[in-house]
Length: 178
Image (tube, rainbow, N blue to C red):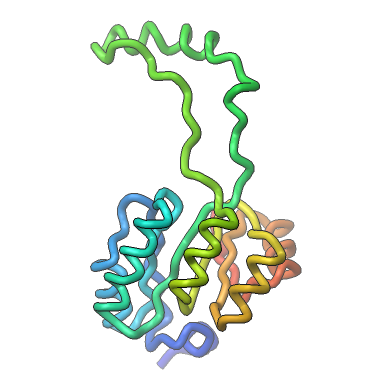
């Protein structure tokens, strides 16, 4: 039916459909439903703690034995101590007051980057697929995940990123952007 079945063979799925891994919005139940329908279900794990990842993996495993993709952010975390929040606070203060929001919150780091502690948790979960946004995990992480048979997906927003992902060992690349 499809002109090529490379994606299905790579991930062990029936249909060339990959559910977007939306951190904070995708759920194990959603990923299980997609997997059981023959696509690649995905979990946005970027904002999860190790305990939350273990619980989500267990819930997914209880619902299906099909491939589920676990997605993480790989980025340099900001060193907030090196930045003076005063100018941004001052710029936002007027808008916060206008909309009755109180004082602007102090800056805080967003989702944590994929790190060795999360890698160890992920290895224990042994997913069939793991994907990464905003960069490549360490060479060690890639080797360890491949050693246990996990297929790896990288996300590229331009040709240079796609080439780096391919050279870095990704099994598939999502091309995203304008």
